[in-house]
Amino acid sequence: MSRYRLQPSPAQEQVLLEHCGHARFVWNLAVEQGKHWRPGRKAAPGFAEQCRQLTQAREAFEWLRGGSVIVQQQALKDHAQAMANFFAGTHRRPRWRKAGRNEGFRIVALCSGDVRRLSRNVGQVRVPKVGWVRFRWSRGVPEGVRSFRVTRDAAGRWHVAFAAIPEPVPAPGNGEVVGVDRGVVVSAALSTGELLNVPGLTGRERMRLLRLQRKLARAKRGSNRRKRAKAAIATLKAREGDRRKDWVEKTSTMLARRFDVICVEDLNVRGMTRSAKGTVEQPGKNVAAKAGLNRGILANGWGRLVTRLEHKAPGRIVKINPAYTSQCCSVCGHVARENRESQAVFLCVACGYTGNADVNAARNIRDTAPGHGVAVRGALQPLGGAVNREPQLIAS
Image (cartoon, rainbow, N blue to C red):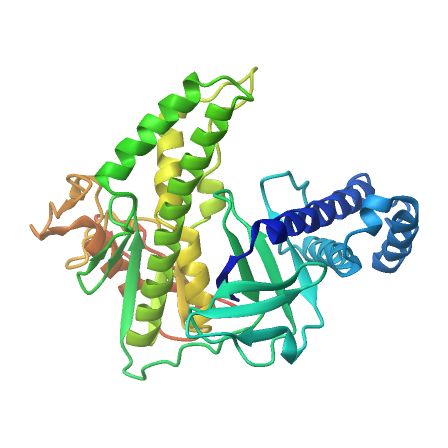
């Protein structure tokens, strides 16, 4: 999707918030209808039946009738697609939407006259019941778009995203293979020796965030002071997220342009970032340390980087089993826990090779891959102090 920053007037923002509320209300009703469905029970209402029920609800409630029927019907359409993805096993079951989170709505049947350019940096898009809303023309709007989504983030910023699938980045054709090791201290280490880091908040911004968090903890719930502190924290968090997304986009494009095959670790990021606090009966251990590790993993964009690589370089991403890649010497193949002297230093106890630990792991990830076009899980296993580099091919 091509996303742009919206610049609505105060009156337009009020109507956009009403659209978000209507879309959230209809979505939550659809979630409620499908929440109690289980295999063997009576099927939940489908999209056509829900549209009929929406018509009856609009006749009964004036506040709902005052909104856009396109916004409300597309909320039902989005829910139907979400349920289809859930039954296909690719996504989780649709969940409730809360005010202030996941705020947005979708508009379809976009005509060529609904988007126009006013100047070099300003454009306009027509939104039902709102009229023409300005947005920052940071790049050209893709040709032939038929729908767009309007969203509002936690910092109160509005965006419009036009639905368009960009073309993949063409392979350079140089036959080069690169291994990518993702970490917490170093965001991405390449087998070429390059160390890439996500640009987070500056030192001054981190200090300001700490002061705001302390101020939020002292503020009374429901007070204006608490609202202002939450808004300021959301602004800093949004700035950090924007920098992370920008880094992911630039890094994934760079890798797709430079290398024919990109090898990454096959990691379950969602499982790795689950909370360790446990239950009342069985409380977790080292909960604070695990929470810090989870924040570090998410702050470095592990999952987003691989997802964008798969979008930009389809068929050229090879996933490797990460077992022993950090303990194996990339020179002699000796595997030992003692090789990893510290987080940053790798010192092989067999051959004496010394180097950056993350770069060494990235080279093991690269060397385990047999080639291009197949899904791979390297079988790095310690066998009498050496390593078996025989890869196991699995059907892609």
